[in-house]
Image 1 (cartoon, rainbow, N blue to C red):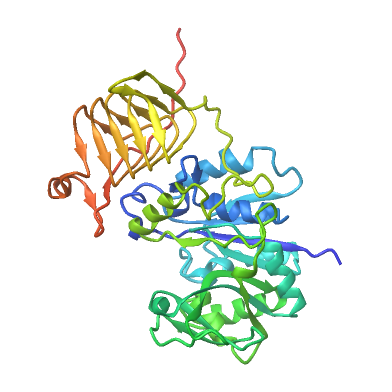
Image 2 (cartoon, one colour):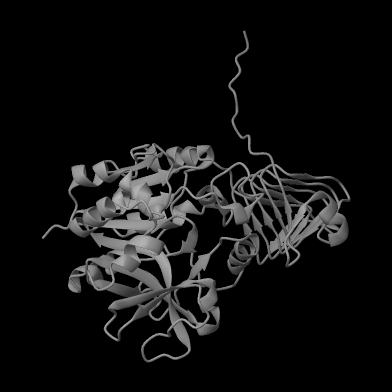
Length: 417
């Protein structure tokens, strides 16, 4: 049987804990890894898994996300016979409101499901950093004859209070949900770990439509999958947990560990960015059989110039994106976006530098995140005196300095007349 699959990507969250990176952009549009956006991970996972019919549900501060989707996913020619379409709130609820929860976001677009008539509907979030062969999760769903399958990742039980925990039988049947409880039940046969929900779901279409309509009629519901629909299905539908650790990515060495990070806070985002610096990072961006796709930028190669004592352009244990020029400066343990300029005598350490930043001569930056278009003046220091930094910038609890940038990147054409 040719299985018809329709995917929804939930990309409408505010991302308030990533402020100021989300001051002018949606969380899924936040840059990551030098040249990508967070949303690229879920879209790449879907496309690499052979799922090409995708609706991206957008809402807050969506212009940056729309621009990225248009540049990288709509006009790239990648998908000629299928689609990736951004969809704003349709105001189809009785209150004609914005999306009120994850379930309401799907309910407001239920006509898209009815028109496509898929066998299964895949509903994934857009704000996590990970690689996943989603086809394997769908195959598990079909094999189990499940109504709902939820992706779950084993985590240490000490972290149970930070996640929504899934309680299962030894066969994987879901028998309970426990929201951020330190005493949540551990995995069957493993007293040291719990199943944390990844917020990614596969639904059989008939069950999904029935529950969406029922939830929409419930005035006491918050219209959320995790809080309302899924807990209500216990005992009424066959629900299974899919163990993310069993997922295999084509092209990765056998036995490679899986990687999944919730980058919901500035510190978590910074740590995930620093993970990329490893000699053999768990998050492998260099697997050609499972590429991380993004916009097709027409960038020149990165360049490193000058080789004199005190004026040597170099980068160590770092990622440097296209069109960046390290001109007599030193970069260590950092991630540089596109078009960054690092001038003579400057030093960048353990930092994330977004597109088009300019690090002036003899300036020093460490343990920092610089948003787009930030200019650091000559001889300035960032990350060396946190008391002074707090007077001008945002500083996280762990001491990461975050400098707000300027989001305007639109070039207006001019014509000599």
